[in-house]
Image 1: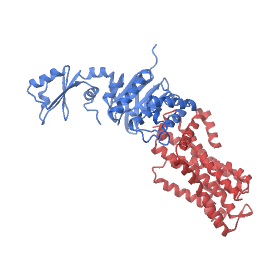
Image 2: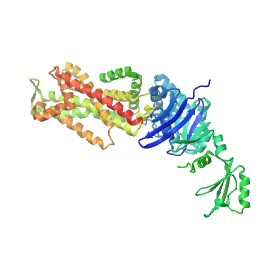
Image 3: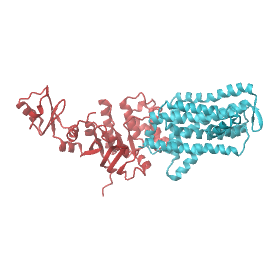
Image 4: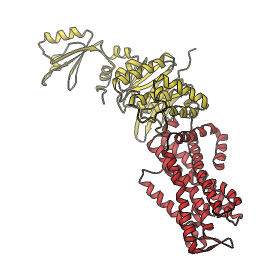
Length: 307
Length: 273
């Protein structure tokens, strides 16, 4: 018999007064998986993460983490989770090293064990040279790496990352992804939220797309692209207005007119471009690219993901 | 402190206060103390205020006042004022920690949000912070008692008897202060808190015997917390010791338990949503 999934939610609901943040979602996450919640701001991702972190009781529905009930067994579950929250809450009164040792003590590690873990983890997130320094002077990427190190201090079975790379520059993002990929290879179960398509594609084995508190699609990144998009997308920009989209009818499999550009979904991008030119249209720019989760989201919700 | 641990034990039976986790919350503050001089300066400045009042009013004004009757015998005015300043120093030390510092960590630094993502529970945060407030309170009261003995304002025996009472005062005010700080909206509310604290400081039988107040005020004062703290500490340091001291201690004990209960509840209610 297969092992029970580490996280199971059925009909999970979170309401704040009149506002429904999470509106009846079903999720299950298996051990060793990297699972993503993808969606724009306000989709209910963070509320879901807080419920899974056992710091926010569900309003309705069923939730089991590590086979336990988060309301009754919160202490036991939290001891086996690593949480990397969206808002930085590193302790600015403490040094980088003490941030980790102090946190380790909350999990009941001995002083010696806490120091050993802190040393190891600072190596892992490449901050060993900053151990004695304060938190405040660290760059955004360094702070985020330290927060991840803190989330790993209890050797957790599940690591929860809420928007792990929001606000970081590309170089910092890639370094972070690389570290998270290392964790995944070590068999740690990762659950993350993101509104970045490339992040979801890079890190997630499987993901759900959330919008307005509901799950609108579920699958692997490749599945979702296959199901809701075409292999290639042509981005066309035209000067002036007019009904360009109408003239593109029948080019590719589907056409989406956005305010600044027109997207043509096609199995073969180059063939679609040739067809555009054959119809005598002269776009200002043409870009043929592979389809991404961004296209999936646009198709599912009619909106783009960008803030 | 005793009250804190009694509460901890009781909750342990009820399912789950871990002394180790409370210690970890306490340890975080020791870490902060280790990490720079800023906190030490705050700590030291808090000691001098009651001491300066003792010297200026107790000794200075005392020279004009002469003696005051305490429990049927006449004592020097400074002897009368000193235990009150000791009680004030216990109150202020604990309050400074559980109002300013706890409020900042609660509302701005988001320290407790990070802590609650671990197995630590709200009641353990409250107990850890209260224990730390007690450490700060006792740091002040030990120094103050040394000064009192050195100036001949109490005997060594009186100092030893008053010392545990200052701990109770610290825990009582610390717990209530922590509960209050979960209700504060922002720094502007600290003006109210400071005014309240100063009013208690002036009219709790600190600088003149409560028996000299008009009857109505006597009743009002006898309902306020610092009055009970001053009476308890004075009774043990200077006399007279009597069963009535248990009433004062009981009042402070109720403050400690109620404050701790409310503070834990509020931390959970506001952060675990």
